[in-house]
Amino acid sequence: MEADIRPGISGSYPNNFAEYNGKLYFKANDGISGDELWSFDGSMATLVADIQSGPSNSAPYGMTEYDGKLYFSALNDSVGFELWSFDGSTTTLTADVNPSGSYWPGSLTTFNNKLFFSGKDGTNGFELWSYDGSVFSMEADIIVGSAGSYPAYLTEYDGKLFFQAESIGSGMELWSYNGNTAVLEAEIRQGLASSNPKDLTVYNGKLYFQASDGTFGQELWSYDGNIAVLEADILPGISGSEPWGLTVFNDKLYFSANDFINGTELWSFDGTNATLEFDIVPGSGGSSPQYLAEYGGRLYFQATNNTYGIELWNFYNATATLVADIRPGVANSIPRSLIVYNNKLYFRADDGISGKELWSYTDPTIGIEETLPQNKILVLPNPTTGQVQIDLGSTIQDYSLHVFNSIGALVDSQQLKHAQYFAYELPEAKGIYVIQLVGLNGAFRTTRVIKE
Image (cartoon, rainbow, N blue to C red):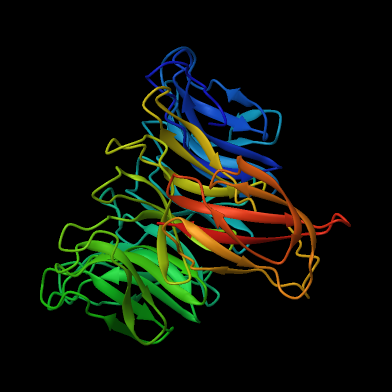
């Protein structure tokens, strides 16, 4: 655990993480100041601003860096939910755009040297807005009047800003904005019904998303700038597999999906075929992977199986592995909102003692240079149920052997005399271990072993 912001079982519920100016920023509640803006510098968590004074919540969300500042939406009773900024020292209300209520800026993203978002000014409903550091502009009024088009999932692709929006005569469909004009790019489901394009993600030169045309359920679609195409019908029929959490990793697009045979599990798409990558919970139950994030050449996520609760897992080399059982047994630590910061993987989790707080995981091999490439380490079998055979190649010499567990803690250390080929019994606990060998000259190399 990196920071126990609210000591005791209640927890501070850190969320909405974003890196800015060398620190990690997020929303948290210390039990005194309510949900407010906090930062973590790698050592200490600090309350940045108490925008809604006292125990009430300003509930900051949508943290996005733009033009050297951190922008976000937050609540103050005097102005409602409006756009705020933080420059590293001072928190500032940019403007009270909706004097009659809340502006509710959402889906913040940068495009064309401006900050874009959805918002409503009290006259118009939720529409596409921008802020250039001085002036607020409604960029597109897709549904004129107070109804609003509700743009969401703002994502830059092919020189345009794409998003989901509603229009007169059409439901929620795929729109774009080129800097001057908003255009309906694809009406995937004709008429007033909605295709609901969600989770827009750029991969392999196309824009991918979840959508439904009314014949097929919510499935994986793409748009290449001209035409929208159903890429994978994982669950045939109207129900849909609901692919979610689209994340690019190792030249594939990864996501969770439910084919109603294997339950909700980890899938991938390589540009041609959708593949079930790993069935963590065999059968229709599903492990429900969420919050996918790449770290250290592996894909990390939240998942569960029949032995452990909702815990931290990763996927590498065609294998899904439990990384850490933070709350032992079938209870859930529920790691969520995964983000890489300062060479660590940060997230919110609950160990059952301290409540939901800020945690991190360190890959012990990150930053390690293997300086003895001529001496390969061969470890068999891998994965293993206990004992492995370690082959150091042709060189015979003395080594220091160090073994680290999945959170980087040293669990074993031995001195090896005239080592070349030997057996080693891994610690009792299942998980990922890193074996490090240090030669007489101080040079070292590592290998990773999975104990099942």
